[in-house]
Image 1 (cartoon, rainbow, N blue to C red):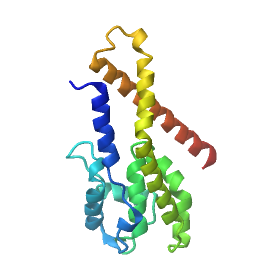
Image 2: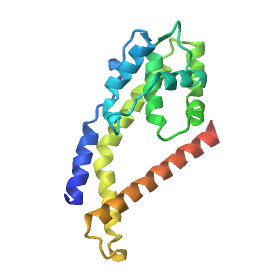
Image 3: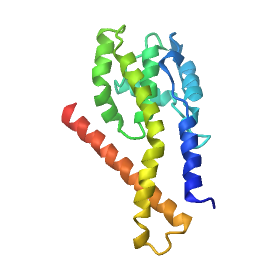
Image 4: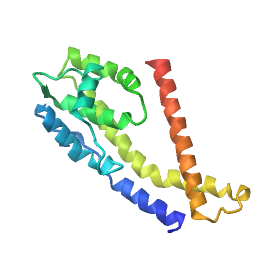
Length: 193
């Protein structure tokens, strides 16, 4: 097995190479459902864990519309705003419940329902993409900090030189961090939305 440094560097490089969907890359024409799912599959394919994973299904999209996470399609067509919201929802749904996503996006969807020409969503999305890029750039330093935390575990574990033990601890640490950040997001939603 490769050493932990090589393993981490390989995954960091893969994650940093993952493309973000820029606002200019989202079609400015209305699409039918099949076109929406095809578009999402093409632009978000790199985010799949397994090749058979579905990015967004017709059922998911219909459920989001029923839950009023975004405005209903117009004559069975989805606008650029729908696509933007679907990309954001895709990234949120692994962390937040559909209910929480609905609460978070309600101010945006309310604005879209009253003024479908609003630029609010575009501004949010541009910042969303910028944060994705910054997060990827910071990945190296974040994981370096995690690696240092793991090194502090050496004194408590006899077999720390075993890569498998280090990987177990790293997955535990990353899961703890993800859970902590998820709980923080939930607390913000519960307190301010």
